[in-house]
Length: 222
Image (cartoon, rainbow, N blue to C red; front, side):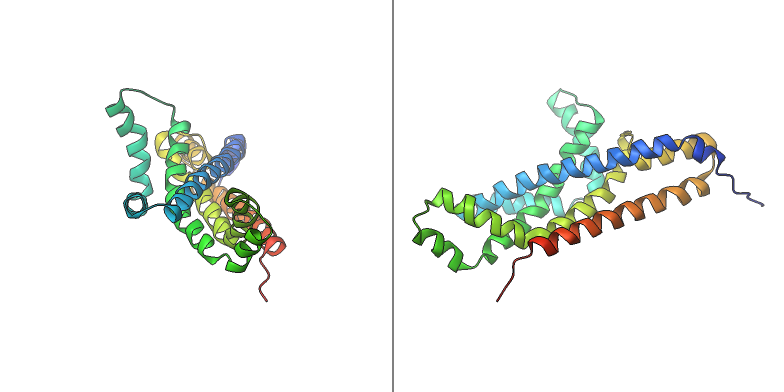
């Protein structure tokens, strides 16, 4: 069987891949921001609450971390609306899934960051008269974010790649655009020969930018 490469149809529909890449990045950004909000709230709650609350949070984390993301995508898009009697669009459903998924991982990231804050910084804040709330806002959170920045960067890169799963519920991101072109042109080799470098190059650019932020805001230890 002779297969002749022909990129004509890929370039003809390349706009679908461009817009798909933009949407993938948007999904990753919204997902990591929402996941950070969930993870930070639960991490702060876990460090300040009793055993029952910590057990509930731990159960959420273990459930999400041990269930495949693809299954969560189907559960949120098909399962919850069927039981609840309401509906939402595929993009909203995937964002909710990404937020819940990212939040479960970031709970542990933030908790470890909170525990890594030098005790002397907290004592210094107390010594200059900061209230508990002020110590959290001006001392604890800024220091913690600088500590966990490498882990946040890794989580963002991982979420960007995971956006490809949105194609199974017809969210028109990059993988969905690739599948659409392949289905309508049967040029699978050419399509993925273009899409793969798009993921690789975008991921590399994101990684370089995140590593620059890590170097810029790294906590210097004596």
